[in-house]
Length: 163
Image 1 (cartoon, rainbow, N blue to C red):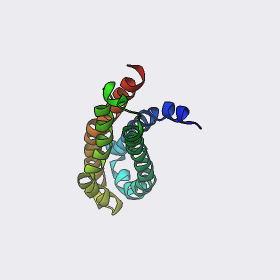
Image 2: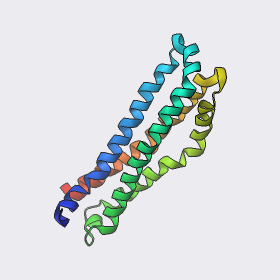
Image 3: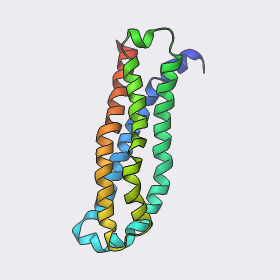
Image 4: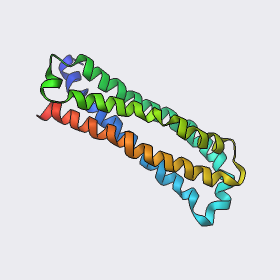
């Protein structure tokens, strides 16, 4: 692949990775809210520790992979774009913000880890309550840093390629 091909594809990587991050976050919410149904609450309290442990172990590499793709692609664009093209087209602050918002996903870790530990360790009859706590934080994280990273990457790519 030559430099022209790479420079044409690279700006789309943060758009794709942030889109996938949001999609995955939405899927997590959709699938896990099923455990909150009142008629399933007793069964959910029993199943959640095993389910959530498997869910979390499989999900973390995906989330970190998507965040890494966003951070490294935004970083590469910021570092290796020729001359002042990013500043001239107004894309530089948007790529910087996209990178920082993607990293911002990790800032939520101190808030999200306690319910994860509780769920994985079996909070006995409180598993659904811990899941609800996790979902609450998950939604706020998704609507703040994940959504912001997505918007920033789309605006940055639009400015770079189409303005």
